[in-house]
Length: 172
Image (cartoon, rainbow, N blue to C red; front, top):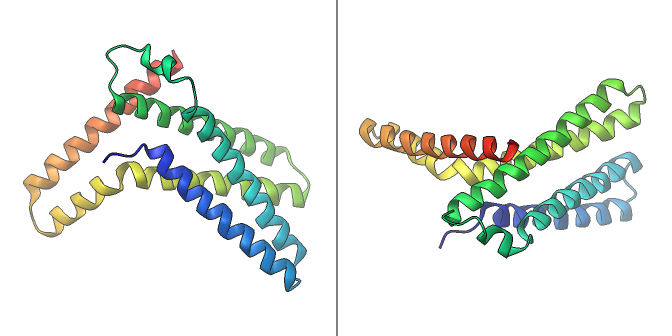
């Protein structure tokens, strides 16, 4: 059964939050460097923000999505995913501008940590979106099955073209 990529990503984020929370607890008990603990706590907050963005996208009124008659479930999922990516990309751009203006070392560290965290989330999403197809292409090429590799590449290109089209529609 096909799962919405944002739901899968949300589970990954929740697992990461859980492991970081455990890490903070252990680090606090053994009295590790306070800056290390603060960085992990910051990362938890960044991930919670990301999870909240995903939740808000997924919990929108289902009727609003159904109003878009003739729109397939996959297309709606792609629209949600593109919207999420755009939100994260905008946040990363905003943080990079703040980083350029920052002259405080601790503030810069926090901004870099948040940028890294958000880019990692985008990387996980890309793996969820393209991972199977990319691995299938690599396997086909390793087996010298270039016809299958080319077919898979075309499928991947169609998905990316559809994402671009949806992204353009969202921005208009």
